[in-house]
Image (cartoon, rainbow, N blue to C red; front, side, top):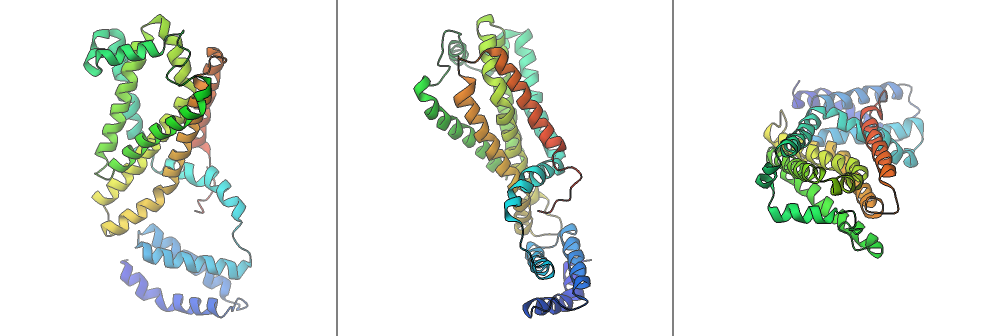
Length: 318
C-alpha cells in the first residue's frame, strides 16, 4: 500500500485519537484497543519505509498514548542502559553485510600484505618509504621507552593526541562513505595495508617484535572496532542515497542517519577507550608484555562477544 493510501485510510482514526489525547479521555473503554491499533499503524509505517514525517507523527502519538494509558513517563535512567546493551549492538548486527565487507577490506588486505612482506621482505618498500620503515623500527626499539609519547609527564597530552588522531581517521572514513560507500572501503583497505606492512616489517626484527605487538594488542581491539563502525555508518548513508527505495533521497538519508546514529556514537566511544589505553597503558614500561597480551586478548573477546551477543532476544525499543 502506498503512503497516501495508508494516510487516507487511517487519517480520521488518527485525528480522533489525537483529539481524545488532547481531551485526556483516558477513561474511554475502547482507548486500549485504539492504542493497540495505533501501534500497529506505527509498526507498518516503519516496516514499509514511509516518510520520516509520518513515522515521527505516529511515534509522537504512540508516546502520548502510552503516557495517557499507563500514566508513567519513560524511565530515563534506563535509556542509556538499554541503548548500550541493546540498541547499539542490534543496529550493528542488522548491518552484518556491511560489517562483513568492512572486516574483509581491513583484515583481508592487512593479512595479505602482512604475509607478502613476511615471506618477501623487499615488498615492504613497495608500500612504504624506506625512511618510514626506519622510523618505525627506531620507535619500537626496546631501549626507546617513549615509543612515540612525551615521557611519563606526557601521557595526558598523548591521550589527547590519540583521540584527535583516531577521531580524525574515523570521521574521514565515515564522511567519505556518502559517496556510495567506496571511499570508506578505500580508507579501510589503506589502513589495513599500512598496518599489515608495518606489523610484518617489525615482526621480522627480533628486537622490535615484542615491543610492537605488546603496544598494539590492547588498544587495537577498540580502535579497529571504532574504525569499522564508522565505515559501516558512512557506507549505509552512501547506499541510502544510491538506492533510496520508495522514499525520496532526502528522506532516505534522514532515515539512515537516525538508524546509524547509535553506531556512530558507538564508534566514538570505542575510539575514546582506545585512546585511553594507548595513552596510559600500551606505552607503559612498568607493565610486562605478558600482562599486555592477556589484557589485549580479553579486550578482543569482550568486543567480539558484545557485538555478537548483547541485546539478543530483546525487542528493539529505540
